[in-house]
Length: 297
Length: 297
Image (cartoon, rainbow over all chains, first blue to last red):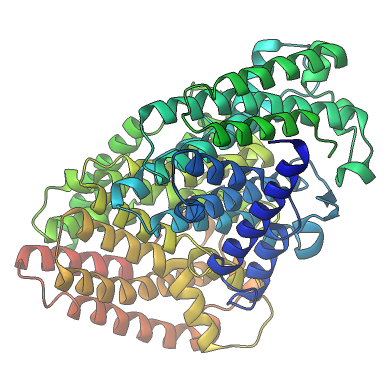
């Protein structure tokens, strides 16, 4: 699959994701309306929907229709969106802009934004609990998401990232941050796609290896964009990592080293697809890995 | 069961709950240590462990050993503790004291406290996903907790409570706040106890009716305590509701009306126990309802 085809594929999957979210998330007028409006503000403020796309693609790679991945795809986007809302709060990154629109707390106030994030996390688990699938499949997805969202995963990565301001370059710590802050949700998206499709152990292992490399690549690309883009291109404040003295791929490896590492991890992700029997699925997931490495926003 | 026996029973169940939490929650030294220390600070800062006790008592009323309710009991306490941490944050109630000790953000800072709450919510679902029970039982518990923790339940109640400052007395709105801010987690605790014990539909209906009345009684008792106690007796700042012009049972019904309503709802809770075949279990849950109505802190 070439870059143009992948872009059309991603656009189609984003439309599919947004339709699922619109159907599965309570309407903005549901009581209490400010809470539901705040949840929807952040859920529908754009976003590339990469995690739901990965979930659907891995379900497809295991021979299932993407419908099987609908609840996990919507759940991972709810979970991801909650982390963004909380990351943007004044006591965290204090960001005014996200995906080119005002952040949740700028529109709805800090308290409602905090609670909208809390509610989105609960909703993610509710969507999984209501998956049209055998209970052991839904429960396996719950276990995946709960582990990825927990203190040893995405929240732990966020804490280490936050505490990394002003620290000297430390490749081990950077790897921990990349793996957990970014990698765990990406791996969860891929693995839930396999689980929803009732894929076997080989597919699950391939998804884990692919996502491990892709997650690191994704975060390196993010760090490079933060260091080299402007807010107009990025849809959020740029140059914040350096301003805060954050530990990033750029601060640890330099821009050239970060680019080399990005290329190597992208190649690792593509190599991890080897065991997949379906050539078209391999081509699609490889194109996505290249897209992550080359994206400009 | 008389009041003294109930107190010993609750103390024993609190010890059991704390032992389960200590075993099931990662150690304070787990990476990242500040996050795990903050989670444990709030989890082990006292608390009456009423929700885990309800979960164990309802499992017992359905003929199961309390061991069957261990994961749900620990999960509901993690979930409840996360809501307390977030409620205490400066952008919410801005409380310095909880259960007689400094609140999480006073000790660990706002960002780590926010993330400790987030991690405790994820951990609650992880504990349910790892229940030693058939997948359909664990998944039913996940569905209960996810619904109770969601935007139409505990978070929704919190939003309406927060937005109630300065509003004129409004019994309908007060009922919404009581039902969701307090009642939904209490109902979830009781219902997960029944589910964990594989109790039938009649037990589930009895748990729902009991918890509905108990949840309202619990919140009325809380409102009366806030209006009439001091911080030394309460272990947290007193008189805050009136200072913030909050909608409470006292502001809507007056102290006398609130006490009458508390007595009526306590009687309703006890009456709901009728269908339970086990007289000792009925006596125990009735004693707990009376304890909630009469507690002094």
